[in-house]
Amino acid sequence: MRFQIYLRLVILAFFLGLIHFSALSQSITYEDLKSFNSNLEGNQEFIILNTLEKKVGKIVRNFDSNKYEEIVFENSDGLRSSFDANQIKGFQLSNGRVFESVLIPGSSKRQFLQRLFSGQLMSLYSLGDRYYVFNGLEIYELRSVYDETKDISIKNSSRYVPYLSLFSALMAGDCFGQVAPILQKTKLTENDLIILLEKFHKCENAEYIIHVAKIPIFKVASQVKFGINRSGLRSNQKEEGRKDRLTFSSGYQASYSLQFEDFRNLPRFNFQISFQAERSVQELGSDLDHPIGFFKGQEEFQLETLSIPLSFNYEVYKKPNQLVYMGMGIGFAFSKLTSEFGMIEVDWTNQDYLSIFEKGFLKVQENTVFPFTQIGFKKKISQKLLILTELQLRYLPNYYYSTINQFESTYHRLDTSLNIGIQF
Image (cartoon, rainbow, N blue to C red; front, side, top):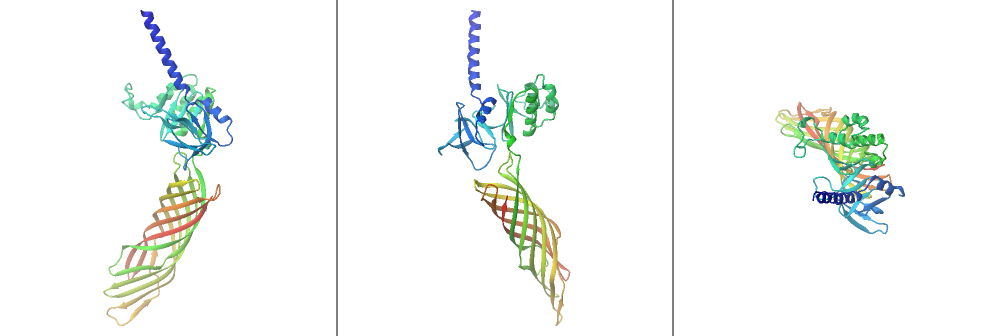
């Protein structure tokens, strides 16, 4: 009787082992990926069917991304099909990104996880800002915070860092002494985790592939832009009966920009730093109706501004050859006003004569910080050259100071500019 019970348990364990082995055999191993890439021509893209068969073609997309819920695959005949994580095992993009269909812990459906590192001993995955490690038997989420619902056996949670303890267990053996100093300094970031796994595989003389090695953290592009701008006034503080107006307010500007774009983990965002020079010839007219008299001022001046705008932009629409972006930022402006002609005419209330003074009455804020927003359009005309147009709105607070007969008014400066240029 006891023998029959043991026999049933052995048979049950055998079949469970077969089921487990069958499930694992369908995962994409390091050897599979090495084989898939061994006969590729250039930067070909492909999908991996659930039967582990490779189909070469093109993954149709507008943005490079680190997260996909569904893909559109175009085969060699030009036919397109959509696939989600239940329909294929994974896919690889031309830039080296690899995605695999995985059932992550705590989820009821499969998802495409980006495979960052493939090794004979362990593989590293990411889904957004979450990371997972697979040791060939089970996939684990790398958590930095103690979760009492999952770690009920941990008594001193203040000193327990889940992902460090997990790696300590997975890397136990002859090489742990060499990787332990690195493990203690490892933060839950893509770069640190890859360095740790690379060190471990080198120590164990195991092969590995770093899939994101060919993908730069970001790309740098240059822009040269030329444009026109128009300024306006908005009152901040002024004497009652005072009116000021810019009667001619057009100017010209040129800029050079460095753009940091195509971030590996934020492909739709970019950061830009610019160096911009502006010049305009303007005329300010001022009237002040005061009990002691009527004051009328006129000043012609040349305004030169050097600015350093810093902006963050988001690509709201993108096709292979064109895109639309929106952004906002802050800038630092350094201005110089040169008065060409200034005159103040006074018609005194209790006098029968006019007074005329030839002098300037306008000053500007020489150093100021300003916010701005912009929207732009880019079109690709060659592999590395784009043309662009950009509309920018800028607000310089408390910029103009106009003083007539000791009566001061303060105005904000509002700019609208239109630029055209190239990116290379």
